[in-house]
Image (cartoon, rainbow, N blue to C red; front, side, top):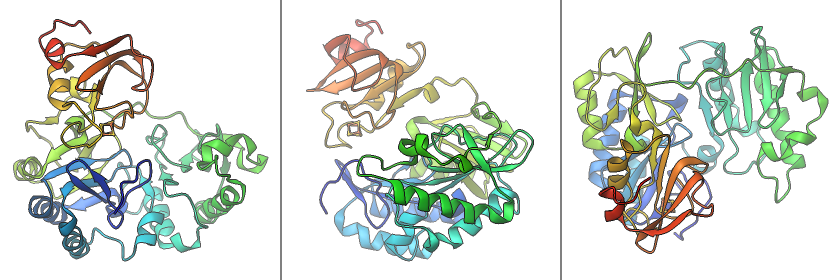
Length: 373
Ligand code: SF4
């Protein structure tokens, strides 16, 4: 298995990192039962490093799996009902659903039909995905997807191509047919350079641009909600022991995944565990750090201990990146520290690949506050 970067890994096609294979798990409808979660913890403990990440597409990934552990892990995931029967289905099932959907509601019905009809889609790039987001206001509008199911302000259902301001009216029963039609339009018009819908949005035929979606809902915040408890996960990464502890403490029977480094625990009213963010405004949700060294072979610096130490001392958003690629936050932060040759470059109001304001800062200088951020 060669190291491939910038492509979408799955359980069958894991990505190699500094600490072994990263095996991605795509739970159906973005949910896992308590038994599945405990089984996943056992698999992470027995066949991986024990670290479980949340991804920005509401998936999970197990880290640190040795080559010899990959096949046994696939067997365990299959037994847990967390694996598609073949790699092609897994790759096509790139479907994100609002975490606030309910059984039988419009989002759930559309997601179930779309997943059932994946074979009707044309061949699409690995990262091409769907967001099913039919609550009163979209909650996934800032998250990656190419074809979006949303509502207009008057409640009408729309299919919206990512990158377009306007969507097309569809009847609920025709929604999946319309999305498949839009996927075919994309497949016929894509080029080697334009591999995501956003790149083609300015060429969309008028019929796909009839009405604006309702304004997006404000970003969700951790804490109790009417339907359960929304819990932040520091750096989007937890140990299987921490997850087991959380399940024990809360008695949660199900976990709903979000693309926001948060999990919804339906029916739970109270959750307090170290490493999890339980209230709005927690600094750790504005702090981003990739695994860094030794977890990633591209890193020459440790990232998360430094990010943890600096979180409370930084105003605005903080990103500590193991290298210039910026996996944890591929966009601007107020303060970005970028690892290079064992030290850090400092970028202000920019991304990890932007020109630094300072170079070669030592972790010690940053930790002790000798360098002001
Ligand atoms: S940003 Fe971090 S995780 Fe991504 S390649 Fe660089 S060191 Fe690795």
